[in-house]
Amino acid sequence: MSFKTKEELHNELFSAVRSNGIGGKTSAADLRTFLDSLLDELIVRTEEGPGSGALTGFAEAPDNTVPAKVDGELQWVELVSQTDFALFARNRANVVHPDRTRTYYPDHLTALQASKPGDVVLIPAPIADPNLAGNVAQIDIPEGVSVQTQGFPIGNLTSTGDALTLRAGKGQVLGGGSVVYSNSGGAWGIGSYPNAPAASIDYDVLDLHFISAPGTSALTLQGGARVRYRGNITAHGQAVHLRYSASFSGEGTVVADGEGSALYANVSSQLTWTGKLVLNNRRTIGAANGSTVHLERCLVLSENRSPDAPVLIDGTYANNNTIILTNATVLGTPGQPVIVAPKVILRGNTVVVGTIDSAQIIDERPASVRGAGGGGADSNQLEFVLEKGTADVVVRTMGSRQAATYLTQQLQNVGSVSYKVNGTPATLPLALAAGNTLEVSIQRADTTKSAIVTLLD
Image (cartoon, rainbow, N blue to C red; front, side):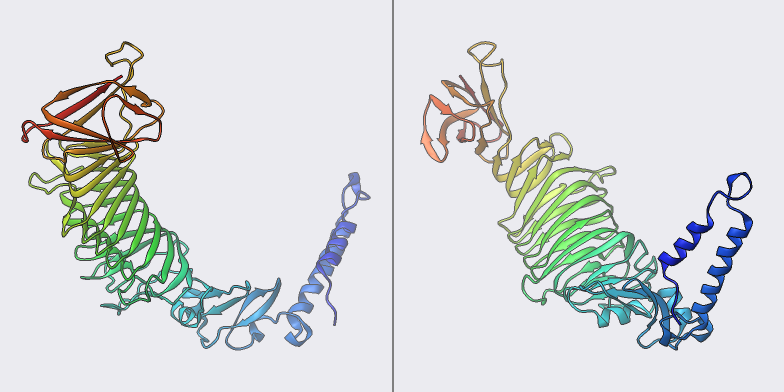
C-alpha cells in the first residue's frame, strides 16, 4: 500500500481551509473531512509492517531497537547488544560518524569502545560509576574521538578515580557547562599519560568546569599533550599540572585555596592563562625545569592570603624558567616580593604591585612621559627604574611616542651606564625610532638600593 506524502496531506489541509462557511470561515464539515483523512493515514502507517516502508507500533517493534530518524525517515534502529529499554532511556549514548550518520548504543562505555577517529560521542546523561578507582576513568576517550557531555556532570562529590582521559589524536571535549569532579588522591579531572605517543594529543576542552579536591588535579597534561581550555576551576587541589613538554592555554577563572602550586609547569612545559587567578591562603603559580608561564590579559590576586605565604609567582624550581606578563595585573603587597624567577618579561600595560626578584628582567612596556623633559612642555623623557635586588639590565621597545633623539641623561645611584640600540653599543645622543629596542645596563653605586636612569631630549 502506498502512503500519502507530506505534500499530499498539506494539499488536503489547504483545500479544507476556504471561505465558503458561515461568515466566510472554514466549515466544520471541511475540517472534519481533513481530520478523518489524517486519522486514516495514521492508522495505516501504524498497522503496516516494516516491509512496506512504514514504522511499526511499539507493540510490534523489532527486538533490540529504538525509534530514530535515519536520513530524514523515521525507522527502528538496532541498539547493538542491549535490549533493556529502561537502561537506554536512563543513560543512552550515540555516535555521530564523519559521514553524519548516527549509531545508538545502550551506554557511554559501549559507544566509546565502538568509536573510531573522527567520531563524536554524545553522552546525554550524568556519568558517575561508584565502582571506579585509581587510574580507571569515567570517560576514557579513544584516539581522535570527540566527546560532548551536554551539560551533565562527570562524577560527583563522592566518586573516585579519574574523570576523563585523553589517549592520542586530535579532537574536542565540549561540556556545555558540565561540572567535572576529581576527588580521590592522585586523580585528575582530565588528563593524559607521559607514555602517550609523542606530541600526538591535540584537543580543545571547552565549557567544562572543574572541582578538584586536595591531592588531585583538575587538568594533568603530560607527554607533549597540547590542550586549549575554556572554563572555570575551583581548586582545593591543583588546577593545572603540566610536565614532559606539555603545552596548555587556558581562559577563565581559577579560585584556589590551600597550599602549594595551583598552576604548575614542569619539565619544558608551556602554560598560558587569560582571565582571573585568585590564589588564596598559600597557593602559588610555579614553573620548573626549563618551563614558561605566560599570563596574558590576566588578573592575579589573593583575597585571603596567609601571613607567612610564599610569593604569588615562583619560578625558582630548578632553573631556566621564564615568567611572561602581557597586559597583566599582579596584586601583591607593596615592598614585598611577588614574583621570583630567573627571567621575567614585562609587556604591554602590565602592572605589578610588589617587587620582582629576578636575575634578568626584560621590561618591554612603553616608557615615555611627555611634557616632563628638560627641553620644555613638548619634550620627551625616558625613565628606567631598576628596583633593589633586581637585574642591572633593562630592555624596552620604543613606540611612536618614545621616538626621539635623547641628548642628556640623569642618574641616581648609578656608578656607570652603557646603552645598546637594537643590540649595537651606542652613546649619547641616542636617536631612537619606533620599533627600536634600547638596552640600559648599569653598575650601581650602592648595590642595596634602587637605581634610576632618565634620558632627556
